Image 1 (cartoon, rainbow, N blue to C red):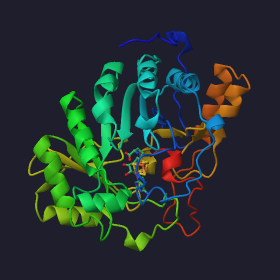
Image 2 (image 1 turned 90 degrees about the horizontal axis):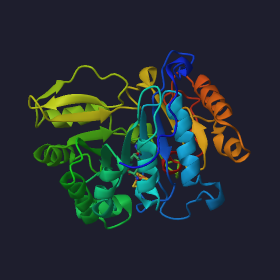
Image 3 (image 1 turned 60 degrees about the horizontal axis):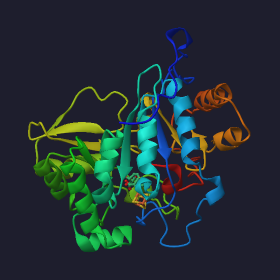
Image 4 (image 1 turned 180 degrees about the horizontal axis):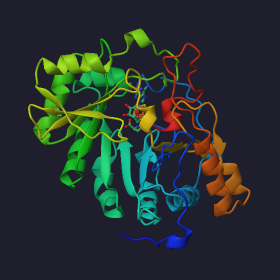
Length: 345
Ligand code: SAM
Ligand code: SF4
């Protein structure tokens, strides 16, 4: 691993944890590297006419690393790179290398990546060598035609090749994510678990959230955690894995383990009470929640010459303003203006 150590605070200068008004300590920074994507998943992006972020507003490599360094110095220990499709960013290997070399009171952050895997055959080895610890890969179906309909691109083969590439260079655990959708892939949940278990991966099902660009989300059409578990129990014995902590996925052993399957029930069993995540968009806006309706403009601060203390104060103010929960089920709930692809999932 290369790259210079960027900040090494001495013990006396160790900052207070990044704690909000509800006592939640924030350790996980999700960074969207781009809002661009090589797929057009129906639950995330429109088929056409995506209002892209202007290039001049996108953070440069140095700006991304600077904000990450401030976060790590304040207690961030995990950085997840996402998007849009993070592997479309030409500097992604450099970003990983430089972020993995940061240090803070919790040591160096663990760097992970959420991806559609299309570029993993070329990038898996360089990313691993740069210090990437883990990958989460999205695959909603194993059927080529469904994949093409769902992502509006005929690229199942490339996603499968990407998964194999991640495996062959030694990433472990490999987590596979699928959004469960009624009438789309809800008859494939068992097959997806078998696919994962047979290869030593972890399958995780995500409840669809109101984050699509078309604002078409419908609570009654959503496949719930209960429905996912009912479908899986028809084929497997599931035993709850204790000790979830702040992880979004609740886990079950499949047929006694060691394989596990997860469900991320953001809508029917929200885990806001133990949330330790904060998000940076590709254009430098810090969000305390996926569903936040306000953002903290770190890009302008950065470009106007703010020092690390000013940036750290802005990060803390954003976290202090975090709401107790996302209130998706509240009648007053308003979907955020940005779709998932522009926030960073
Ligand atoms: N392009 C990468 C990928 O697909 O893995 C990273 C970004 S994507 C926004 C991150 C995750 O968000 C994916 O697992 C995707 O399935 C999930 N996602 C996107 N829109 C969603 C929605 N409306 N509800 C639930 N999950 C969603
Ligand atoms: Fe792209 Fe990921 Fe959104 Fe699909 S879920 S459109 S792969 S950003």
